[in-house]
Length: 623
Image 1: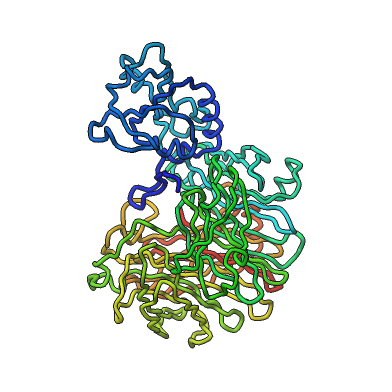
Image 2: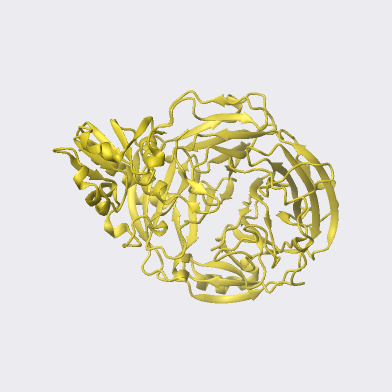
């Protein structure tokens, strides 16, 4: 496993990690290392030596620290020494593992061995024109970055869609720095794209990129760096995979979640005649060693390893049936990646149709929360995991609870079902499920035509909980056989009382009691839609004051349409019905819909649908 700290649920992302992992930083490291003359002494004032040498191995002869409590400790394969020993070390180069290191270098100048030179990580800084906050290099806004699975091959293309939401936080001129890596990790193209001056929408289409740079077919990953960011350091997007040859395939996925993890979960085993492929994409400039990546049936603890290296920034297709032969749905799979990759995508092929979705980070830092079983009554049902039940006459809907932490040995779960008007129409205790359960609940067994379900904790048969409750949701068109699926986790919704960091807020501390959800528009062939859910852990406003706001490509408001939703209810919305063809034409190709509510936190799922039975669905994102 790479010894890197990437993401902390309390503090957010580790900026030093993102500064080191940037592709341009990787190029800078190569130049920096080429100029080092041994023996090399590494001074580690910020405790990042392990991450630096894990991501970029090089020969270091001694490691020095200034904290007396850390002297004599193992770090990065060396034993730390007191900084006061540096003068007698015989080093020819002293590498200071820090950015903005001029003051540090001045402070230790008198400790340098005779004839030694100093090098610092400032040598790998991004160019000044790529820095959003000039005064502090390790400001999180300087590294608003993410990866996207990006492909144009086999009749399938990809389109990344988002908006310049940074403009809402006061950002000035915004642009994206983009680098496309091929399947072997080679650089196919590097370019920049200016964003609208206001909060307008934008897209990046793989077909356009192929034409622009004269590329052949490719399957790889797109690195996205937002320059000029304000207020928000996460690059959020929706990614459509569509049939560019007029085929039947269509799917969408959420952003990649830019933080590598040791494990991921929520990968379904193949069902019937399905083929399931995990697209594994190395997020770093160091190879993934053979034996690092593994798949395992959830709960089995018998991982099967990939006995091949994965090159820097390379993409490999791992077929589930080859690594875990005989495993079938509803079995689910855990993936071990050693913190080398961000959230992978998986693709399921059945007949002429494919669908693509994402797995989720499996936490390794959780333990059971003894406060959840006895949660105060003011928090009502506490943690809820809401998801749509699509119209039963056309769609089959089902779900599967998915363990999403290494410590989750049991999942004590109940299903609550609500119609669109917010009336509770069914309840089903699913049991205290074991980690290796094979439950996949079909709503054909439950009498509800359309609405939504909510998974909640229920301890009648015991069990433990940690608040990290997840599930996979699958939907099938009864005529075409097209399938779409999504996955997400539970939160506390719509209560003014708080528990730990819930209800979450997009901006500021909890409680989060407002909504800003992004909904892309469709085209002549495919119509955009969303299922908006008003989940409530406890009693809240009887009806929401939700509105759909249509913006054009420059972020100007074109039209607004109210969508009142009953508490514990839901609504299926279609922009072409809410606004009409004229308003959508005014919004233009960069237009989008913002779902707004000032006093209710909604949760939503969005997608595209055509008249031939193809559709996509994934959870919405907000900003």
